Length: 417
Ligand code: PMP
Image (cartoon, rainbow, N blue to C red; front, side, top):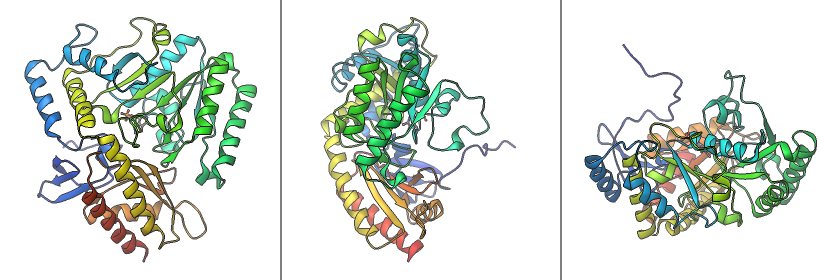
């Protein structure tokens, strides 16, 4: 009898039968408040009626218009509509299916355009599970152990991570930029360095926001050395952090923007955006794929953008994010084990530490499991799994945030009290 591979590590035992907004229902009809959103994917909530209608309409017209064979209207319309939300400079786009594929597309573009082999990534970053993206992922050894040899040409610089270092953010930033300069001086010289690849907020690495001084420093060094700044906004884009792109918090525009997850409300779609001057250097035919820019996924992405704009979901993410942070902080105040509550918009993490100050993955896991038993679905992240993360759909309302906060407080109480 066939069984599912143990390669998949299941966060909950729930078998989801149906989803609606921020709610998931299992096969027995039990309701769960879903603050995972399929790892930050169902931006407009489960099965938003406008996304469903757009996908249904497209399914009946054309499912697979293979984009290197023919073009199709949803693809062309999506390209046009992306112009409304992309930084003006980034006026060329390319599509794939998953975040990993899009990160690889960005890397290939940076290498082809610069003729340089190396890439500098930032410690704690997660960029995917293909061998190339696993080679650039430094959030946990789990993503690359046993897969060697990995891709060569990857150097790792520090990310300004105040909680990890136990330093104020200014000190962590100063250290990160100094080490970056040292790496460019001692490990990979600028004319051999194609790109900096970085997340605006460390996602899988523990929900650690970057900061303006750090990203300004990266932009300045990228400009000075002709290095392409690639921002991986796979988890942070499409309104997640209370701005359409997280980079807007830091006033920095990348050379290559990577997007996925929230773009399609659950349909597989990803992409990169870059200035024409850069994208025009990519070698024609060197990128593509069978399924990229699937017609139904593109139709869903257009509907997703409509919903985000019409329902003002970016503002909602900012407001509900504030509410969530406040509620989690008031629960945290009662417990030494809750070391930190942090986040941007609806990307919020709650870090646990043991009595001796070590990151405490087992307490985080116990609280996450307890919350699931009580009907609140959450995930963990961070190198030791010490951070419980909250990433509900952007449609979440005030009452649902309150309900989640109450279930959270009860779960923390049950495990720690
Ligand atoms: N980059 C980031 C920042 C991510 O969070 C993820 C997925 N968690 C990826 C890349 C990889 O995306 P995918 O799983 O769609 O390949």
